[in-house]
Length: 123
Figure 1 (spheres, one colour):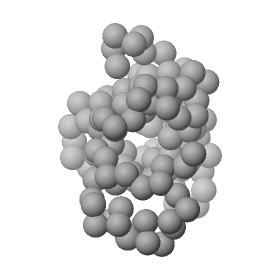
Figure 2: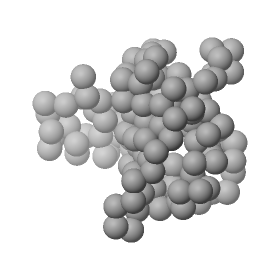
Figure 3: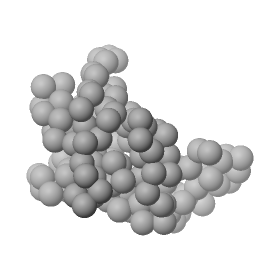
Figure 4: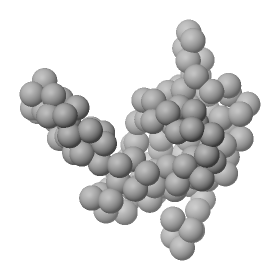
């Protein structure tokens, strides 16, 4: 199952027209409320984290990563594309994930993180 999300209904409608074979949901990445706990094996973030980072509010970062942990199945992982420097991003991801890898690809970095260690009560 592949599900794309965006907070914009307009964007989701455009994506439905371009790729009707996939699921598209209007959703706030900070809660992904329509998805049950442990719904996905993989979460891919292509810009959401960088958008929140630009707002300079660390509570958004924690909320986003907690949400990713909530919807990931045990053993699932996050793929995150970012312009944030590896040292800083590893520190941020390290608050909730045990295993973090950074792969530099031209001007951006692909981070993979897995094994969320937050307890259910912290999500």
